[in-house]
Length: 631
Image 1 (cartoon, rainbow, N blue to C red):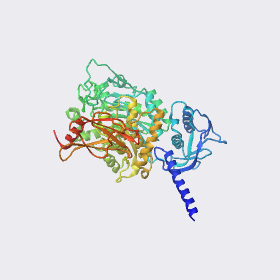
Image 2: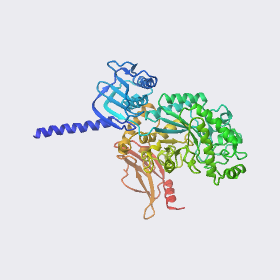
Image 3: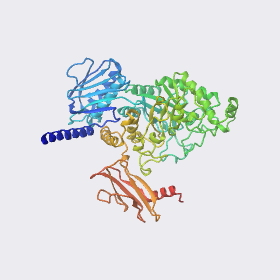
Image 4: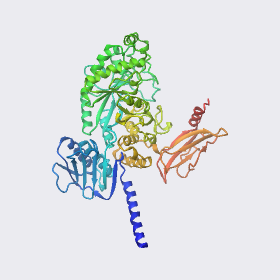
């Protein structure tokens, strides 16, 4: 009896150990709906045979996977439409649709003999291929041939499908221009994690980025500005002698190429033309669009507020003729069903000074400037719909009354989305509280200064569907990367990842499967893969947070907290650089009277994992003063 019990115990322990090992080996983002780890592995042979249907959209999947395996693994990949033996990877489309999988779901089996991916549509096969790539060793992400790697895939049974159809990232290409090739790189990074929408913020005060052939000045004038490098909100005003040569734009052929590039990766691109505010580039190009004389003196933002009128004139027919031309050409360039027309942060103070706007209000019985903007938005909505598209705007378009069919993107928290949904309108959730990728990721002494801080663990709390609304009206969610303080593409990557992982999981994975303690180890696995791909990311989750307060005797006390468990913090006040032989943080620290700085670094065991952070004591004191009202 004892022998039987001992044998059973050994089997149980072995099962648990296998489960632990499998969990470590499989680190997929976003987390699949169902993942069953099996015993054993499949080893990718040197000669890979992919069998798949011959239809065009499936060929996009097989071509993508072939290129991936050829580049890094050096595999000799052959694609055939006829199923033959032995097949390495088999793609199949269901003859009868699996209603659970929908349009983008897939079923992936990895056995010791081969790999099968089944879906209803080619998009599902593509996402199954993305999961397969994450199951392969990290070296598959390399952009160069890698040798000496055993291309092992753990045996699994995965059934997966997205929670939302709208899974997006917004890239602001107006504040700083990013090239066509850089946008392609961004698309490639997005689809790894099953994003399917790139929202391009194409126009703003700093630049107009899309060619409109009927309005050539938008790009000959509006696409260029004076180059400013420094801290946003502190730029000096441009002088007349400074060259306005900084910027760029996408030709219509560029846009067509980007749209096709996205299509080949099952990703749509939504354009945004931001009006009536944020329109200084348009006003600089065509001054008659403004209700303020002299507003065409184009400049960068020199402070937190515009020093000239950056709004379009809602009372002028020239404005609507202009927008009709713009929307006509934009609608032809972008096949996606929605056009985003902005509507945010419109400075209405200039409208209040305009006789023509006052006349409009009297004629249309408008009593507030929010109603004036609503009048504008409803007219623009009709133009958009006349081009066969759906109209979308930021949540400010609610304030004066929503147009009949307007979709709302809620950014000022989720309340705007709740209001719109309760009125029966479609909503995309994109709140600052969870989804603004321009926000600082670590302590402000480590990041370019912007409005607020958004740590990875907070981003991971993003939930697109409030309890009080009809979930069917929530199309999905997205994160937004505004680029006032993002000067180059490497910084775009740094600001997007890993917070983009958290957004991806929030819009794809089942709500009940989200778990921070399971998520961050998978993030670390992705870091290793990004290192292979030479994609930049922020290691901010290893940085501690600093909280300063006075104690009972008014001495300065600082508390340190880690975002992820299991890390040790070592510190110094003596201006030297701490390592693990320095004092370890175990509780609140009283700052020595004459200390000028606190230095900290985080370790995991004997290995440094965090960045060396130097925190000035003066900065800590200022935080105390602000919090407690001291001067």
